[in-house]
Length: 119
Image 1 (cartoon, one colour):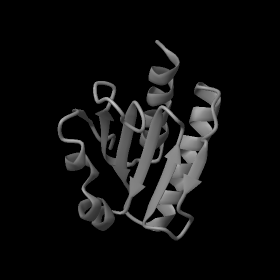
Image 2: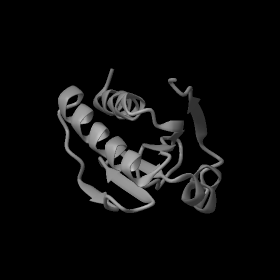
Image 3: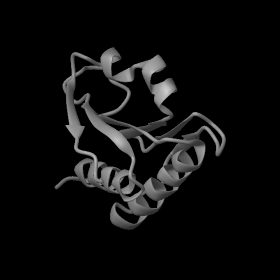
Image 4: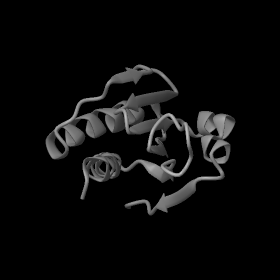
């Protein structure tokens, strides 16, 4: 497994650890000029869960992949938090903001994989 795949696996593990919902990965590796190799998009049910998801991703990626995000956007009361790991960008949304921005369909020409929710 290469470093990007290790990072991607750790991100998904971090999201599932705090019961993030509707997780998808967007594979941008075949698109020339893409801003990253993968995007991971998920949602939480309230701002506290978004913060918990962000913290969990940060912790698990640090432990499993040995990386810290280049930048983090959004804060504890934000309806969206983004973590930029360079090759992987993570978007954690409230459901309303996720529907509004509809990132999945902006990248519809890429490979999108739905990750099953853990209950």
